[in-house]
Length: 388
Image (cartoon, rainbow, N blue to C red):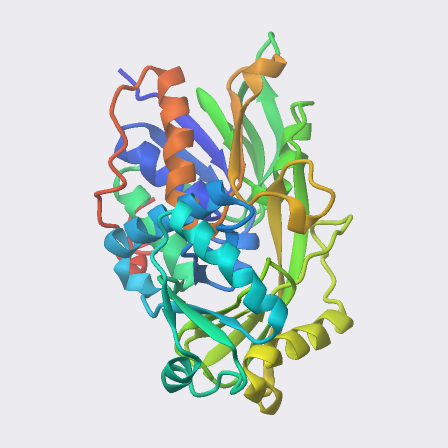
């Protein structure tokens, strides 16, 4: 008897985590990605393992998801995480006034925080603004984006998942009733086209989810929202440093290897495959980052890049939309065999996969429960050596 089968479009964080979950439950999984692993937004994140503190005041659903998943990822994939902690710092009176809401919000979201004196914060992080007014310790961390994705993908491969990288979906396949039965793909390495079939196709393409959904003539309310980040050539802090205020542009500075990254902005684009880097926003990252870490002004930019967030909702701007995720079963719109998962954060990739896999398994008649909370992931190094 053949296994129930699923095609996942997209090998970013959500796609590889969903492949891991479903393969562990005994589903035959094929992942189709038009580039390499973490080719899109997932490969361009700043790598912050969120404590949830950033969202604890205005987006508590996302905050709770982040702190819960933060603790799980530390246990199942420690190889790719630097558990270095983080700080929220106040450098002006507006930040200081926000502190009361921050304390109340983090308590409501069970996020552990510790208020420390400015002089203690400066001992821990000597490059902080010497005039800071307040500081809170939070359980942030940093991760290597590619290695995180590869760890999930390697573990999925070990359970039989197949990865078709550099393979682009050109069209969805349908039966006579308008239900999706698979994908028509173009192998970009040899120019050949072929069809892949499965019981259910999962659209896990993040910011591109609306474009794939349109192939089935259904809509997904995703608002692609790019942001600019700048990497500087000195590791000026050991912890992630967050501005103690409502989320804004350039309010995070975090260490990555021998660098620091300052991010991020928020704007709109028409062409997802060509996102320009806006010069004024590079300058803005320097100015905002330097308010927390003045010595950034003496560092040299090592790289400038953008990531396009797949925000879901009806807010008037990228900053006003919640950072939680959304699952869509398009059978409700008359298209069976096709679902979409989008939104969320890198920190919540495992949870997004669990909820998607739960729904898909119910449709497939698979009763095996999710085991990803307790399953340590394989090394990212194994992805390229395991058979496909």
